[in-house]
Length: 225
Image (cartoon, rainbow, N blue to C red; front, side, top):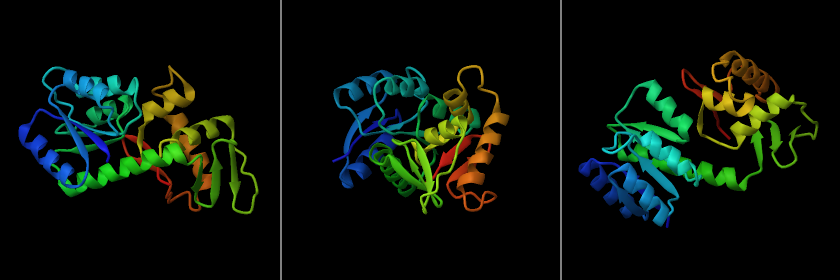
């Protein structure tokens, strides 16, 4: 039974989620503030967190940062904030996906299944396929189906590895730039566009219409297995 922590201060939403999730076999824990969310998470480590950003005591982004200090459990933001800045900030802090209120329960359940599936892939699959290429993370090797090696530069490999280790997760430009190039490169978006283009040319069957190394306009990039 998958443990889900729901963090929201709107009673109607909490009740609806609790009923729907329990009916589908999830073990549900509830919190109405950021403080209680961190306390409940420590007592009952969640396998998935559904989190509102507008909490009465402190911002949900701070809850994300607090959770990310010790858990890799997927965090699905459920918020009425629609501004791209809020979405990017949540993703930078460590959220895995973002659903805007009002929402449909079927969409939310589908997003939950997706982030849980991606989490399992990230843990259990050191070898993934990108188009006709096989990426072996443990061997740090990319090969075609015929066994021919694809040569990547260190920067190309580092960028690919970060994306592949987060399958399906929307990674903001800032996240990728900081992870691959380090502090001080948060605004060097030209670097990111260039190396993403290089990876697509080497790995995507049709680089102009990528199916695996995807751009989310204005937000970042996503690896779809």
